[in-house]
Image (cartoon, rainbow, N blue to C red; front, side):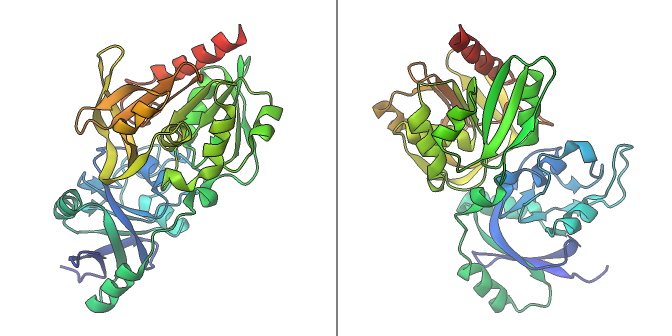
Length: 362
């Protein structure tokens, strides 16, 4: 057995030895886990994982490589990747690079050979916490000191948002949508294009006046990393534009809409991450299997003092998964209806956004 060359040390003092892949560097981040069985490329390239080290619960990662067409962002910003078994010989005919090559290209460290089941249990029992990935020979006390001195950043959205607006057009479009980029997944833009929308993606700190100058039929608020309370520019935009045009939010967008209308949010013990969360649609009574990725949630009790109506709940923990306000022409969901790969149960939400814009145009 070859000697270990990397290790991770958790904030609670637990130490795990393994083998490095990807970028050969030290990193300190918040550790979270993801229960998806497929889709590691989309997870790695999801900007919502900025400054987070992701422990994959599925044991085999890397076996189908990485494909040019499947990225969710052009420049991945994940903090690091923790897996049980890493496969560096992909068997997918579509692959263009190995996972390790891509992680190395974007300076993201990875570690394999560790007990991901135990790590996941620790996170479930004690909550998400800080973690370091470093060389195996680094003294334990020194590694633990670096972990505990690390402060989780609050500027992730400003770092992952586009710096200039960009366009994604589709033939014979019906509607023009402005999408505020807080770390937008590219498949959201693709879905809006499929529904007949030209999309203008704009930076997170755009003003309401600048948005209205683009004459959009609807406004979309994207997913993204971190605490929604840190994204005050977008919250202010919602306060100014509510009721003036249709607004649809996903994930972080859902939280920012809720904050703008007077609700509150809180940090969850370990969040929701994976493609298997059951959500109940309160209007239809139907169950949707959803894909999720978030650390924060909207406080259900706080909705009572707002103009928001609860539309969806998570059946695992009864957290708020969707809200709407007909008066203010907006709605949002905590989960990802565009999930790729993942469940497609919730794709109808894009049609609801289209219907809202169609009604407004009449």
